[in-house]
Image (cartoon, chains in turn brown, blue):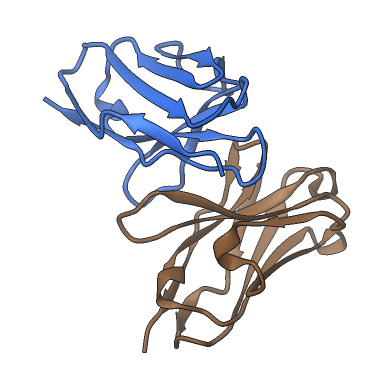
Length: 114
Length: 107
């Protein structure tokens, strides 16, 4: 079964850091671009970052540039999102997704609050 | 950044009726357009990609059309499980962006 499972969400204070992880199974992870999408409470969807198969190309939405870093470990079938200098408006459900757009994780909740 | 605008924001439809959802891009996205369905507490589910190709396992009552800047998602005969929020998303260039969503509710 093709599956993405996220972890690492939680409550963090403004200015803090968090690292999200996503483990893939059921497909050849190293063959695909991968990415993160977020959804603020009651709001729409936003692609946050994507990364190429070999990790050498990365793209970020402007609102997270310089604060978030996407990375991957193909040997571990894993995708990561390092989030630094977190702000209240980063509060959201964060989904790991394969940009064939048909495979999504269940999401992990990040809450930035004092 | 390409802005995606969906209309209407809310669509009230009776079961069995046809629903037509619109999505407009601020500049051409060719046919690089996807449609998703999202229910509360769930991840989005891909319905259509390439503007008109149904994803695997998607019923034939869902169809997509359009190219350039104007796109349409049609649900030919609404079933109870189709009441949800629908999003369009372009992937023509980065950043990929979503529309704000259309909520399809029971009339």
